[in-house]
Image (cartoon, rainbow, N blue to C red; front, side, top):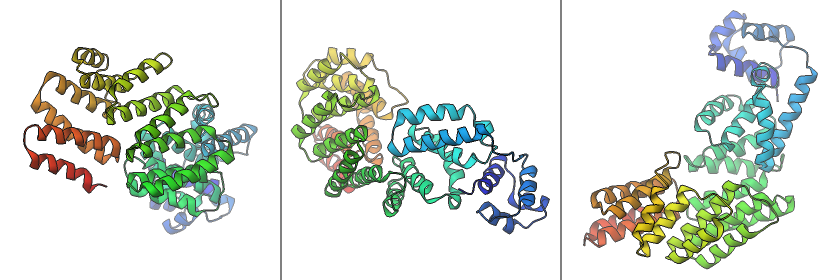
Length: 401
């Protein structure tokens, strides 16, 4: 990376200096400043003037900076391998030194690390802030950093802009391997095709990713890929295969899974069972796995749905009372609202909640959930002999396939 050039641009943007004003103060044109900020080499005297006007003093590279640089490189290696524990450990050290690092030649590397960390921790506000700065500095990146940047830039759009998620993922795959991120990109491309309901290509890319994960001995990511494979089975109505694969992942002992990963896997299992109408199985899985992992509101909500289908409304209501709607999880809160409407027989509220929930699941690209909710809407209107509305809402889903 052209680190000093990047430091000038990043600092100017962060402090709100207009390019024309800074150029005028330094006795150069705005066009020339733009060239400098894009990587043009200039004499050290002009560099010092620019830094001074920005309130920075470039010091000789110290042992501390060398140490921070090594921590940054370790962070990027962990991020390329998707080793979240190592990435979070390294960034916690770096974040405590942010003020110092952002006024040094390591500012650009730290900004990239901060962006990746914000994507990993799913912090929308931080993602937007750091992404905006990085987009203005992309030309200053070396090839190996650009590949990592493209991977996480795509990830930052995964739930909001499917076209950009796919575009940036394809950029990673078009580049020669630099940082060992091809396996992750293959997995992401599988997700992209799944969002487009192209199950054939989703399966092909996922198998390629699994082979790469196995070669890299990246078993944690292999498990993610296998869980995704189970979802593909579900979307093709192969529920036995989906459940068998998910159970094998949960019961494996080779790689210790984090609590959140095990919770997500159990959630997938319960959803598949409800989708397939296997309500007794929902309760059995909750009893079997609930002993050694913390049950979430979403788990209890799916238990409640199964109890409702088994004509146990009191038990369902007891479970729902343990999980008030959580604003941090839109899916869970909307599903719980639907269940309350069913239990209280509030037809007007149920109609409103179902339509709102379908819109949310379709927009989020969650085909399985959208199919589940659409079936509920179809049943709701069919029971009232309003078949035109039932068909209308079913067609909304079909149009997104």
